[in-house]
Image (cartoon, rainbow, N blue to C red; front, side):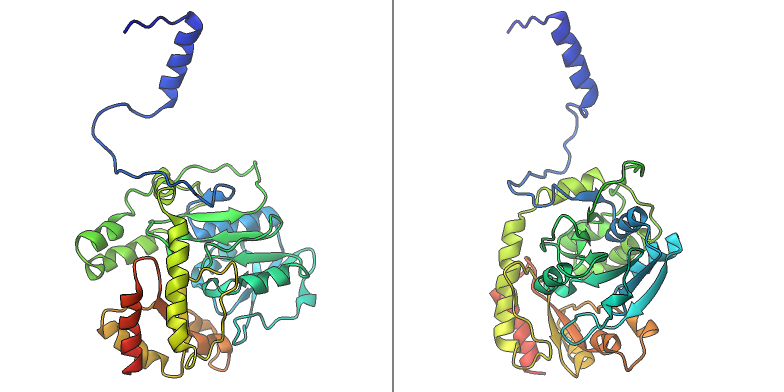
Amino acid sequence: ANFQFTRRNSINVKQIRLSIMAIGGYFELELNRCNHYPFDDLLHLNTGRNAFEYILRIRKYSKIYIPLFTCDVLLEPLEKLGLNYEFYDVNNQLEPIFDYSKLDETVAILVTNYFGLKTAFIKELSSTVQNLIIDNSQALFAPNGEEIDTFYSPRKFVGVPDGGFANCKIDDSIELQQDESHERFSHLLKRIDLSAEKGYTDFQQNDQSLIGKPIMKMSNLTKKLLKSIDFESIRKIRIENYNFLHSSLKKINLLSFSLMENDVPMVYPLLIENGNVLRAKLTENKIYTAIYWPSVLNWAASKENAYSLTKKIIALPIDQRYDEEDMCNILSIIENE
């Protein structure tokens, strides 16, 4: 075919060629774009803790109250910024034991959407309490109003090496470079190619590599991975698995939850008195349950609820990798304990 270009067309083609990636050569990892990507409106950063830091940098609070029952990585941005903070405890409904009159224009409170099951409570709280920051690290699917500062950690829900989202106003004076993720990928590949056990050391190393990372834009790799995921299917499977476990375990679970309309759980939190014994039995059967969070045992007193919750909650996996047969296997071990 014969093509003729005007001078103007030639300039446009040259500009296009300069703006695109290489054409030809070896193939990259094949990742399709899903039709529905629910996070386009959020700020894409390199970790959840850095999304938290971004919010703190913008708001310039003088002090923040944070839950005792939380992950120690959230102290990282507070210490980096030299921000004054104070702990508060939570009750058995995983809601703050807190006097909200302590808040003013310069003082904020961080409230956690535990296990993705406190969305309705947080929505109600946000209608009366100012200076809220919502930790949705365990609630990837939870919606929040545009005026509520919120951060998310997608790697708690899907197989990506890093990444975080922030729902907040954008400060154009904060210049961000783009992160790279290709060297933080081995645990994801080894779990597929070898086993969960053989990739676990790499998983721990990946976690360590994220400590102290500056705030950066999410890597191209992580963003492309996220945009290839069928989140609607994930939502459906997680809810089904949660409900299946809950139908059998609600009679022994010391936590009382009902899934609300916008709840998509991260795990099934089972609170029982012999939590450590059951966790060991599950591990023997290669059912791995994360402890949320071991560091709490270092900073909470044994009389505080956060200490007891850390000791006793068993976080049963209910995610998109598993089906009803897997849930039955989990139940059989619990019922035989």
